[in-house]
Length: 377
Image 1 (spheres, rainbow, N blue to C red):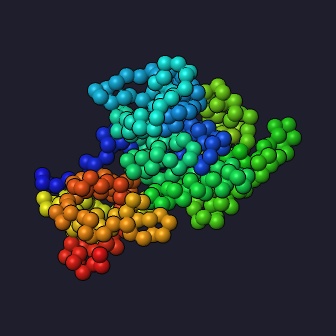
Image 2: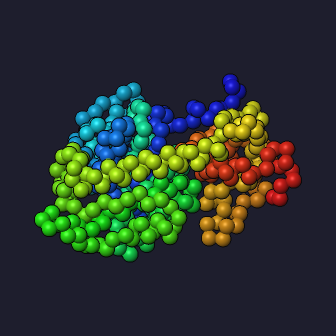
């Protein structure tokens, strides 16, 4: 193995000890995504898991307030940032690094540098789950995390009303287009229960998230009620489960946390049949994959590059391939690769191209090195 890169050493240093990296996303703001992220992190922690929380909303960080830590109480270990910790959850946020309450007035490249620092230069240690609280939308942050953070999957948070559902569906489809598995949909603010009479009022309707999951063929993870206790938890910086687990709000988060864990276990079992036993590079630049059934496949770098599935190589509108064999150097090599969760590999080529995520299923369908000459290019 001295002449090759193996799959075990490809994660960014800060992420190397994390089993599951999960993005928590929404198509629009105002649906309570950050509230869900912090309370879900604590709920997962109370099930016995080790959990981290990354606040990826550089311009509007809210996790310091949600997690009860307005200023950073941490250190730097070597060149890695040591995350803050509260309620048993490790977390980082741009809000912890600011000296004041002033706005972050940065252009996108500067913000992306912070995201890349959070991806590769935080000493998370060993975690069962790292939740990433994304900003709303489908822009640079989401794409960078999908390509570089090796996401295990994405959770979509929505409220029941139609306008939120429509935008959430767009966010979900973005993750599908970049081959990130969908863990499921959480419906937030799903009905208000009166503490005095027990009557449920459908303030934002109810059931929209569950119906959306059925329509899109993805798992439904559960509903979180519109509850004053949850609102107060964000103001006080004390997640609802820290007040006990008997309230309706606390029970809903624990139930969703168990469903999330079960769904991720199911996803792992489903992908195990396609997950390679080993991936390595040869001196010739070929990529060699050993599959669970013992089959060994060797892939020519020219064929891999020609069949890159990324948006710059394949039109998102028509599905037409926008790169030809003549545009690819004959001596192109695979220089390195990154494992992306347990479902794909990101391949880096000697021509500088590195944005293609090759799902294991897709990789199995590509021609191997000895068949490359017969492939239609």
